[in-house]
Image 1 (tube, rainbow, N blue to C red):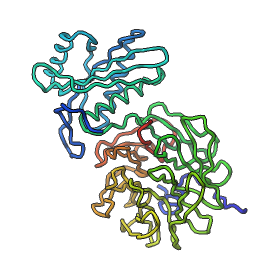
Image 2: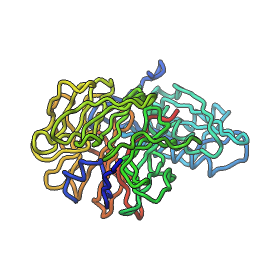
Image 3: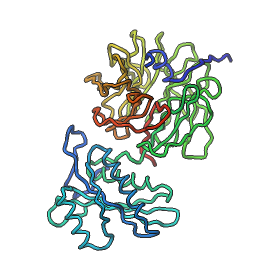
Image 4: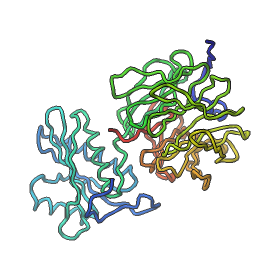
Length: 442
C-alpha cells in the first residue's frame, strides 16, 4: 500500500501545530486543620519537616536529610503549604523530648509537623509518617500515621508517598508527588521520549530509536504510553511500557497519518486521528480487538481528541468553522458544538474534574488558556514572554505542566490551575516539549 511520507516533521499534534500554529479518600477523623483546596489566595499551612529519623540500618544523616528535603519540596509544590526545615531530628522513642521539640516548632509559628522515620532493611526501605497538630494547645497531638515500603533504590519515592499522604490528611485528596512526567527531548530530526519524576528529577529515555518520536500520552493505569513515531519512516502510533519488560505494541499503522492519541478513562479505548480515508478524522480504537469506529465525517480537519473524565464526551480541534477551534461531541460523535471562537486554538486537554478544558490559543504569542466545559469563562493562564503551549493536567486537576520558550529554548514549566506559581520543571541543554502527566502510580 502506498504510504504518505511527510519529510522534515519535527513537531506534531500531528496536524494542529503543524498546519495551524505558525512557527513560533477522605482525611482521618480528628483532623482539625483543613485546607480549602478550591480556594484562591487562601492562607497556606505552615508545616515543619525536620530530618527523618533513621531507626534501623546504617546510620545516615544524609539519608534522613534528603528524605525531609524531598518531602518538603513536594509539600511546597502542592501550593497548600509553606515549609520550614528545622535542623534538629525528632527522637523515635523519647516522648518528653519529642513534646518539647514540637512545642518549640509551634512557638516558631508551625501549625503542624511531619515526623518521618525510616528503617533500612536490605533491599527495601520501610518508612513511617507521623503528623502532629501543633495548634491544639501545650500538648501537640498526633493526628495521623501511616507506613510505606519501597525498594532501597527508591528513597525519593518514599518521600513522595509521605508527602502525598500529608496532603490527603489536610485537604481530603491525595497529593500528586508519586507521579511521572513524559515528554519529548532532542533536536530537529532526532527526538526521543523521556520519563522523569513529576518534578523533573531522574529523566530517563524510554525510546532510543534515533528517529522522531512525538506526543506521548499516559494510559489511565500509568503503565504505558501511546505515542507517534517515524521510526519506520511514517507517522505510526505505538504503545510502550516504561516500567515493564514487555514488547512495544503497534496501535495504528494505516496509510497516511496516525496521531493524536487520547486514552478513554477506562483504558479500553483510544481516540486518535487518522487520514487513511483521505481526510484527517477522529476514530476510536478498541485496544483489546483492534477494531475502529469513526466519529467525525467532515470536509474540515478534525484532530486532537481528549476524553471527558466520564468517557461520555470528547473535546477536539476542527477547522470546520474556518480557523481551528475547540469543539465538543458525544462519545458516539453526535451533538457537536463549538466551544471557542476567534483566533486559533489547538491542543485541548480535559481536566480530571471535568469542569475545565485547557488549550493553546494564539493572540500574538501562543498561550495556555482555559474554558469551562460548557463554553463559559474563557481565560488566559499564561501571558508570555515567548510562547507557552501544550498543557497537561495533574491527576488532581490542581496543576498544569506546559512547554515554554520564555527562557530561550523549550523547557517544561508547571503552574497552578489558576495560572499562578509558574516555575520551570526541566532545565539545561536540549529542547523539552509535549509534556504528559501520569496518573498516580500503582
